[in-house]
Length: 414
Length: 160
Image (cartoon, rainbow over all chains, first blue to last red):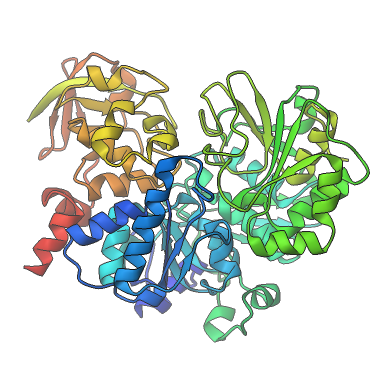
C-alpha cells in the first residue's frame, strides 16, 4: 500500500513501515531551543541526571525572543544558555543572528527528510523543505538532549491540493489563512498536512515556509512539502533517492483531501482574536488602524520585504500609523540593504528593527495598548499577544499590510 | 476517587490565556502561578483550591508550546483538566509533568464554574450534578508515564 510523506519519513528513520496511530520511537536529527525556555530545559536536563548531551552538534540554541534585552532580567536567560552550552560542548549557538525558525533552515541545520523538534510551536516551519518538525515542551526537550530519541504517534494525513495561478494581490499567507479558516483552529490536531498541486510546485521555498509555519494554527503536528529543485538550491544540497521519494503516493491513505483552485483565492485577514476567524479584506475595508507590523518567522523574509517595498515605493505611511518592519534574520537584513529594499521602506516612513521576535511575542518594539488596532503579518492574534488584552490584531499578508499602512485603514492590496 | 470544584472555560482556550508570555520570564512556576488565567479571571489563583478541576471545551491549550501552561495549573494544585479535546502540545506536556488531561465529550456542556465533580480515574468516569460521564482512556504508553508521575520519574524508572 502507498505511503504519505510523513509515513515515508518515519519508515526511513525507524526502519519499519508504519500506519497512523502506531506509537514509535524516532531518532532525532536536530533540536532547537530558544532563549525563553533554555533555563527550564537546563534545569530539567540536570534533574533527569544526564551527564552529557546525546550529540552536541545536533543541538541548536538560538537567542531571539529576548534580543536585544528589553528588561534587566532577560539577560539571565543568555547567561544560563551560555553556561549550558559551555558545560556540554555545544557550538551551535546564535546570539543575535535572527529568528529561530528562519535560522534553522537558512543556516543549514535542517535537511529534507529530517526529524526535528523545537521548544516552540512554530517548529512546524521546517516542513517547507520536507522535514518532519514539531513543537514540544521543555521536559520533553531535556529528555531528547539526553537520549536522542522521542516517542510519537504516527499522524493521519490531510492532503491539500492547490492548482492554478494565484491572483496578483494574493500571497501564500492568504492561502494558509483561508485553509485555517476552513479547517478551524483544531481541524488538523494530531494530523499532518501535506501540500501538493501546481500552485505549490511553482511557489518559492519562502512562500512554503509561511504556510508550514502556520500549520500549528489549525492544530497540525506538522506540514509537509515535497522537496524539489528549489528546496535543493535553498538547502545547498543535492537530493538523494530518499529525499526525492518524499511525495505522497497515489494509493496512500489520507484522512481527507481538500482541493482548491488558486484563482479563487482573495486577500484575507484573521480577525481578533482567533486565527481561524477569517474574513475577506474587502468586507473589512475602512476600519482605521494605529500600527502595521511586517516581519516575524511567518513573513519576515526577503520576498515579503520586497512585496511590501513594491507597494510602498514612492508612497508615504499615513502620518498617524507606525509601520514596523522586522527582517527575520541578519542575512535577510543585509540582502534587503543591498537591494535597496530597506531604503525604500525607510523613505516611505517605516521603522526598521533588528531581527527577532520582540513585537510578535509582545515583549518589545511596538507594544500596543487598550483599544488600538494593528494589521500584522505574524501568526497569532490571541488576546494580549502584542500588548494589552484589549489590542485588536488583524493578521494579513505583507502586501495587504503595506497597503493598509499607506491608507491608515484596512484596504485591499492592489 | 477525587472530588473538587469545577472551573469552566471556553473552546479554543489558548496557552496565552492560561499564562501570558510576559510572565514566562519569572524564575519559577511558584512565582508565575498567581497570574494563571489572569486575562479571563484575575482572581482565579486565589479561588482555586488543591484538588479542583479545570474544565474546557474543544481544543483546550491551543497555541504555544509553553509547558508552563500545564505547569502553573499543577502548581496551583489542579487535580486534572477535563475537556472535549486538547491541542497536541498541551496534551503531551500535561502528561509529561504528571497532570491528567482527560477527554470527556459530554461533561463540559453540562457543567458550570462552581459545580462539584468526582473523578474516578481508574474507571475512566466522572460524576457531576448526579450524572455519570465516561471519559476516553489514555493510550497505554501515556498512561504509564502518568502513573509514574510524569516523564522524569518514568525515565528514572527505566534506568533502574
